[in-house]
Length: 364
Image 1 (cartoon, rainbow, N blue to C red):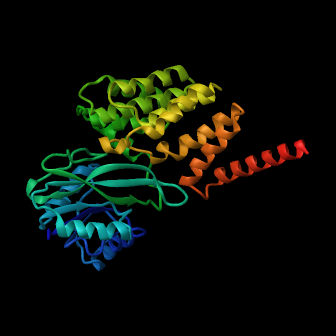
Image 2: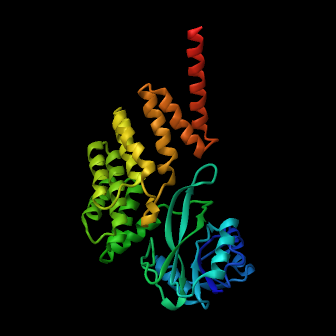
Image 3: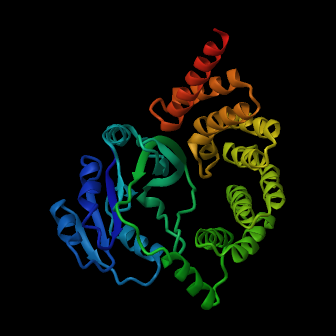
């Protein structure tokens, strides 16, 4: 059985830290907590869970803080979590089983990271991340913000999932400030960070600046292919918000130059045609989406509902607008098979029942 150091960086996390550490009981052989300036009860909670707590002066550099935590680890493998992450019971048991059986020749284990959820708790936004690493490989974090460890070595992929469950919102401008400080200091921004900087600008509605950077990401062959595909989708989002639907469509189609079609892209293309009332074209693209390979398998961001629930509901709408009601109802039931209790599914069912009742009354 391997041994594991859990390494975390925290600041004012008393609302979530106990939940996190309780959820991973039995996984870590030691807990390292690097505190970057808490003024609440965070440290006391960590100590109550047996953690070794170290202070680290915050310097607007997430990689530096995470590397400081990694430097304190003493076990064979290092696991990282954020304070608002949890491992549910099913995945906790799977993690313990992995701990008992992992080949010590494995350097890195990629695991699922669920970061958004529907009303029933099903993940709606997910991707794989480097989660468990052999300490002897001396992996290092890179990036003052949106930090990451470059995957390397003998890697395996696990279906074990960590859930990111925020209970409060942080400073929405923090990441942008760090990027702008990097620029002000004259540091050359690597392709990955240019992409994430563009996404920060997009999220804050600074579309013109985001568009310029996203186009650079799309055109730069040194940008990771998944980020080029993501940049196409984000570029389309910016252009749509500016009312340039033709430009948005071209941006989405350009993503096919970098890899096989993604369900998320097909759904976005379908939405452009749906909004224009071009239902047959919309149907074509929504019909493609469920047949696409999962985006996260290539390492990209994935919205699982784009391979099922979303295209089925949109196909229901398209066929309804074309007055092809049998097909419309069929796709509503396909969506129901995935989300039985969904309010939109139930609304559509009632519509179809009422329509059949009117038809029956008219025949009498």
